[in-house]
Image 1 (cartoon, rainbow, N blue to C red):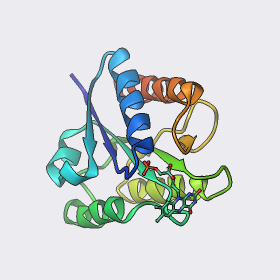
Image 2: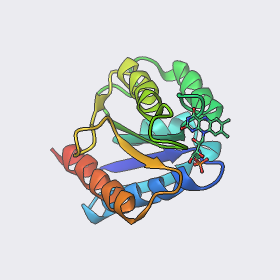
Image 3: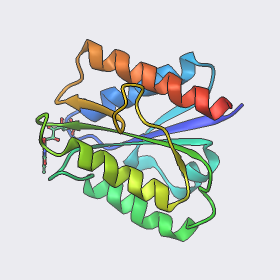
Image 4: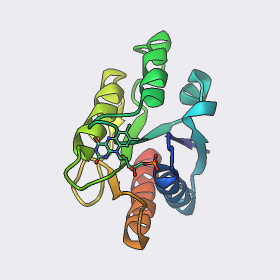
Length: 155
Ligand SMILES: Cc1cc2nc3c(=O)[nH]c(=O)nc-3n(C[C@H](O)[C@H](O)[C@H](O)COP(=O)(O)O)c2cc1C
């Protein structure tokens, strides 16, 4: 069965809650999903997944240092090992205009460099976004995002 990996960094738990909801949506759509902290994620985990969903808190309008460290390490498997895998991104930010879109783009840009195929959010945005802790509506949107990612992996 195809497998999705949801990798998150999260200091105060907001991005982690989004990661778990996206993982639930992927599973509801009938795919295997593993939700992992960036602290425990290695390059072999990325290689083993058919879809990779990266989530980071917004830090000065971009991804966190830990997520960037994983991406920088991925130069060791660049450019072939992640080619044509499905990719998607999510973030939690402190404010609506605090750079969440640029954070999503920073994650998406890295995945595009790996020749991955990027899935946007069903709302038309670049990925899933929460302002601080995700509320019920955001959690439902994350679950839908997971289902959308799974449906594209199955194609
Ligand atoms: C070092 C640092 C930088 C941050 N930079 C931004 C920022 O540029 N824009 C923003 O909206 N929020 C910023 N925040 C707020 C976090 O993105 C926000 O609290 C988020 O919900 C934290 O997610 P987490 O609970 O997964 O760690 C920053 C927080 C920290 C600690």
